[in-house]
Image 1 (cartoon, chains in turn cyan, brown):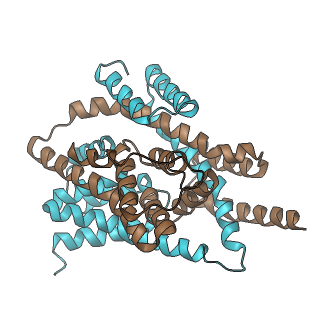
Image 2 (spheres, one colour):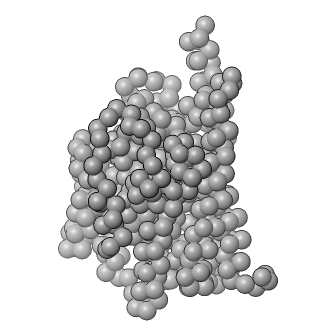
Image 3 (cartoon, chains in turn orange, yellow):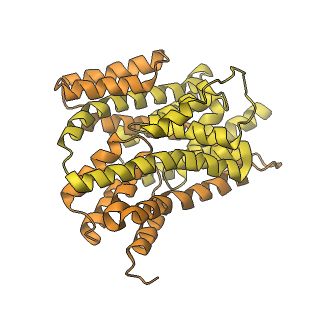
Length: 176
Length: 201
């Protein structure tokens, strides 16, 4: 396996990238763009934008935009290699850290640190919600849709899929 | 889609307060189902399934597990699948949840990639996407609200202030993430440490 092998390039690129992707996949998208479009020329600007849209629209974690990049580079093996390289190493790392923290021991630090991270994590999620809302809600109708979904999903136990479907239908009809 | 009809047959769940740990197949199917439902992000569906539907964790346990996965590198929800599965069923459970989360959507994504390579125009998709994204942001706001409820119920003022601080720093002031965390993590750990010592004393 030489350095020119595209599969190997995918594995090393995304394996390395995932280790620096703190704060979620969304935080890594600009870096993916830089690597896939500017550095390796795996995709054109439009292909990347389309891949982003497809990844958002499809079910599953949004990180799976790497599946599309991998496919563009090396077909089905590329798709699988990119996905695993992006997801598996950090998942195993998380497994080991979590096991370390939850080992029965006299120390109260692990529990303390985890408890301390909770409010920060929720604050970060709230911040991403605000940032996303500012970029997607460009019209009054869009803002109303977001607000309505937020309220309905907070107070009821309705399946969220219905709310997403309603959003898709409204925009397909040109209302939002 | 034939891939998501299989999980649907595995419906009957008992409403116990803390149900016994599920088997590997049940873990795989549960994560496959939340993943396939997860348009615009899986967190919403993961919390709904784990806390509300199956009651495998309570709201606080979920928050702590997610927070840990959030601060470790890599895609949060993928980390969560591995950590959560492993807590219930060891490493095999972690792999089952991980595979359930990733396998079905990866297959769908690969098919979409093939279609795109053949036709290569996603204008209609993008139009539909606009509304779905708006709704997805609404869902995200709702899940943030639900994750906040344990803190609100306990009137955990310190935690609420820290949360608000991070939200303002990142969301409103747009300060860089690393700088904010460099300050927020020591402050939060320090306050929790002091408060627990006060309670113990």
